[in-house]
Length: 347
Ligand SMILES: Cc1cc2nc3c(=O)[nH]c(=O)nc-3n(C[C@H](O)[C@H](O)[C@H](O)COP(=O)(O)OP(=O)(O)OC[C@H]3O[C@@H](n4cnc5c(N)ncnc54)[C@H](O)[C@@H]3O)c2cc1C
Ligand code: SF4
Image (cartoon, rainbow, N blue to C red):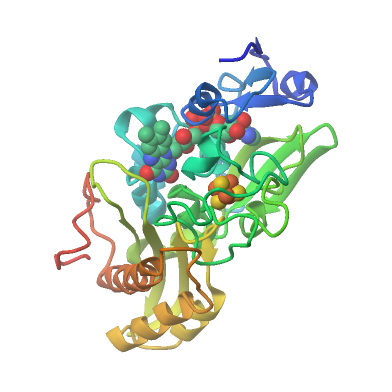
């Protein structure tokens, strides 16, 4: 562990004033501290933002949107009864992520900013363009089973590991941030970046900007009756997604009048597919339609190594998530998801 300074400012303004190049915001620390221990991240200063006033609230704004403070813990958000009723797919995504203990500590802001789980990134002895620009990428030709199949580049084939972010992408969240230049808002679709030639630039956040909150628009709640997040992983108790899908439908008169579909763990950002959504609108919810939309969702996918199986898995999880969404959101979300290999009513 390297030496670092630690400060716990009392206000957002003081936190922003405390930022210096090489500093890092400290949320629950469930990702940052791990990476500091391996040496993959070496911030010279930690600015603890967990006690900043006013950022730990879930509130409904006058325009009907829902604002979630960046310091709200993942567990508190998922278990907030009003929130889970309005946005069950987001709650399901949160509860399928990490473990109970981790969700109690992890913050909303930290979840959006968590780093890739590429093992070569976490190991400072491996070459990694994302950690050290221009160093190379030891993942290529290495263990590629969990790597990206969409949107990857020769410079980086890592995926974004967040479950929460997949549901947020599907529901068109907005991220509120503040830096020395003041406040601004970033549409969720623009928040995470594909690697291109600069994989080290992971998000639209500028250095020194702090996430204050997330907003879900009022329309997002209109999907509450028919929305699901399904995740395929190697161990149900807790593990990162191999692939996942967030599917939300609005049904009227036996037809789909609005649709959202995003894939997780297939790219360096949640993979929302507008063309697949467009295929669904105006149609009756039927297996053949879901198969067409899922095929469209993975159009353009290509293995980045020994991981062609992920393309088929992503296609299948998209079909299952759409099917489950059409069947209806369960009244009670299961504490642990049912096996995606079985055929229970909602999978
Ligand atoms: C064993 C294990 C299993 C896990 N499994 C899953 C899983 O299945 N699915 C899943 O989605 N996640 C999983 N996670 C990841 C977990 O969700 C994240 O570690 C957590 O959400 C990060 O939140 P945090 O508050 O602890 O962030 P921290 O670790 O404190 O910070 C993470 C990053 O965010 C930055 N940051 C924090 N707050 C802000 C802010 N307000 N503004 C700007 N930047 C900020 C930090 O500087 C840092 O770079 C797992 C983690 C572990 C350790
Ligand atoms: S895939 Fe990306 S994160 Fe992983 S080693 Fe290569 S450059 Fe680094």
